Image (cartoon, rainbow, N blue to C red; front, side):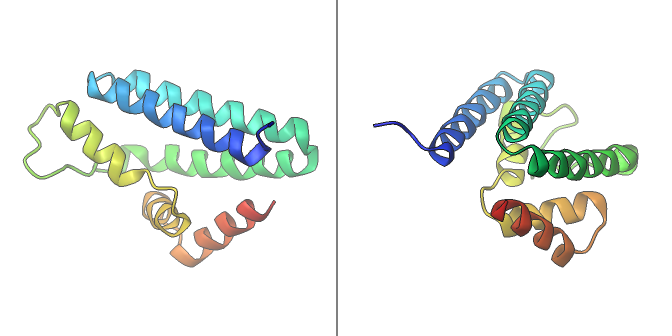
Length: 133
């Protein structure tokens, strides 16, 4: 039986999650970041190919979110797990990743809201609309 689009997307997300955790468990944060960005680009491309209008809107929305994050990144102080030394080890990197990664839209909205300084309700509304596309 063939898997549906949602099932395949969930499988890919699980594979990316495992790949990122694997990189972080080796303290390879740059590789983990590159894997996450590649996955984002790949998923956006798939949406553009299947639903061009929605894909264009998603591209614009994601570009805005990333641009806002990039604009504020130098002023941010990263969350440090308790007991994290000056140079974090793999267990600290995994703790930060796990606290930021959540398939729960409300948790994602809260995280993005804190990152870009936009109220939680607005971010939650955009994410909910994105899920419905």
